[in-house]
Image (cartoon, rainbow, N blue to C red):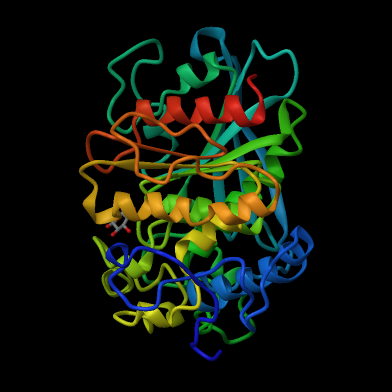
Length: 388
Ligand code: GTR
C-alpha cells in the first residue's frame, strides 16, 4: 500500500472537499490504464474488490458454513389469495444452533413462471414489514408495500438484519464467531465488520432463494435502506448472482463519495459505528485523500448489472448529491462494458427519475424507504430485467 492514488478522475473541485480528485476506476494501482473488458474483469475488478475488503468492509470469509433449512410456515392464500407466504428458518453453524435467520418470502400466485424477487434485510423484524392493512393505503410507516409489489409480479424476501449480526460493537455474537480461529474473539484489522456480515447474510438468503423453483434465479434484486443500503451494495459487489442492486439513502460507506465530506464523514461514521467496517477504515478519518478507493468504485463493482440509487431531499446526512456523483462516476465502467451508465450529468429535479441502467432519483422528504421508492425500484427492474 503506497497511499498514492495513481489514476485520477477529472471532477469539479467544488464537488470534493479534499485535494487530488477521485481515484479512477479504470486505472490500475500501478498506473496501467484499463482499456478492455478483459482487463477490467481479470485485473482491475479483483484489485478493487481487494481494496474494498482491506481498506473498508474487511474480508468476508470464504469458508463454507453448515446451514440447516426448516420451513416454519406456509400459506398459499396470503394477501387476499394473491401471494404464497413462507417463513423459512436458516440455522448456521455445526449443530445448526449458533445463529438463526427467519426469512419471510412472499411470491406472486399469478406468476406463470419463476418470479423475480426483491431481497432486502429489514430493521425491525419481519412482523413490522407486513404490519397493517394489506389492501390499499394507510400502510404503517415502516411497513412495505408487499401487495403492490406482488401485484406488479415481484416476490419480496426479507429477514431482520440483527438475526444475521446484532448491530452492536460486540463480536461475540452473530455470525462472526462461526469463523473464528481457536482463541479468536474478534475479527482482525482487515477482517469483516457488521456491514460485511449483513452482506454475507444476503448471499446466504440468496442461496436459499435459488433453491426455490418459483424464484427466477436470474432476477433477484438486492435492495437496502441506509446502513442496509451499504450492505446491499457490498453484497452485489461481491456476489454476481444478484441481478441488480438498489441503494436507498445509503450515504457514507454506501454510494456517497467520502471525499466530499458532506453530511456523515469517515470520522463520524467510524466514531459512532466502529463495528460496521474493518478497523483500517477509521484510519482515513480526515485524510480521505489517502483512501485508494471511493464509493463510485463500489457502484462500478456491480457493473454491468443495473444499479438504482435513490436519494431524499431532506436527507443531508446521507449527502444526496454525493450519492448522485457515486453513480455518475461509476459510468465509465458501464461504458467500457458496452452498456449505458447514468444518463445524466446533472442531478435531476425532485421526483424526476433518471431511468438509465444506472438509475437515480431524488424525492421530497427525509431519510426513509417509502412506497414511492419501491415503485421506482420496480420500474427500474421492469425496464432493465424484463417486466414480469
Ligand atoms: C445513521 C448512520 C447512517 C445510516 C443510518 C441508518 O445513524 O449515520 O450511516 O446508516 O444511521 O442506517 O438509518
